[in-house]
Image 1 (cartoon, rainbow, N blue to C red):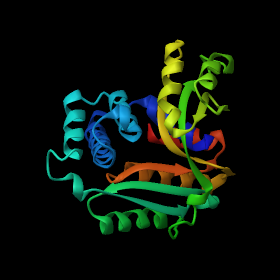
Image 2: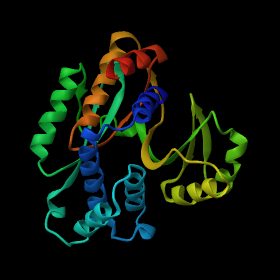
Image 3: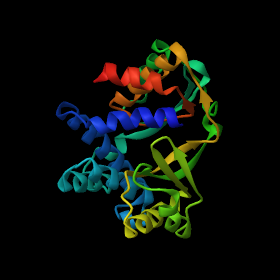
Length: 252
């Protein structure tokens, strides 16, 4: 998924605009609330919550906001039960498989919006199970390939990582979801700076998408990621670097 990863990396490096930070914090808080509701309020015993809290910290979300979201999920408040996780599956231009993980208090609204995004950008929303089989849940840690080499990441293997994959300017350390925390601690303990660490859906294979299909595909992913109810977008595509650079320049 190097094309999608690079596209996301370019946007990340630009930094979130202040106008969008409120939306980002809302999404992060919702993910924390649902994780705490489903697995309990202690991050040490709840891997999804630990991941959600870590992502919030990396986004500079205030500690009190994080705690408030945990409290809501733990029953201190009344809105946690109104949020449900809904997974949408479909294909984008060029045959790329896309999983859209949403957290919503209105399934019908979110379903209509996701369907409209696929249709508008030349994709097709599918039935449950249509593309989920292409993905598997994995812990993924990303480090800068310009700063570190595979030899620097041997400690990750010793801590339980399954593989280290080069992906353009990134090195991706793959593990079982339950081993993500231990692998991250091992890397940071050896002095390796981690760019991101999360439990995500990794594709078993990728497809190359070129030309106008690639442009429509990246716009579709961008539109989905911007939606208030969308928590994560997972896809299995790669695209030529020049397409990414062209659209990134347009977005700047």
